[in-house]
Amino acid sequence: MEVVELEENHAFGALIRDGDTETLGRMVCEPLGADRTRIVISVDMPSLTDTTASERPKTMGKGTEDNIKALIEAGT
Image (cartoon, rainbow, N blue to C red; front, side, top):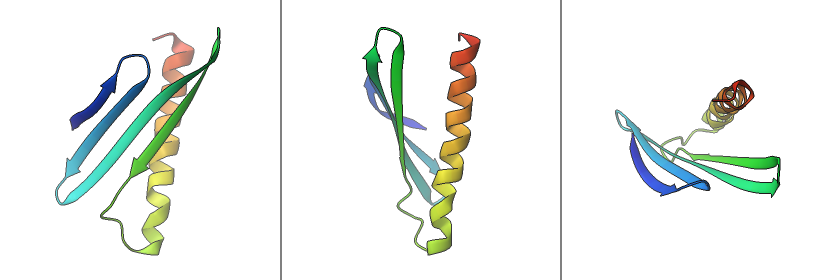
């Protein structure tokens, strides 16, 4: 994993290489008030070309979303 973007308290981007597959991931935190933050996660997998593979980033994103939620709720 290579960190390609890091803006403290706002954005994080990474390039992940696994064999011949590259995944570009980005997370942005948007303050919505004193006690609320929106987290926007995007993923790009340029090597996915067939239509059945289009669900893979959604599944991966849901797992990431669940992990982040658990970390926040645990106070870490």
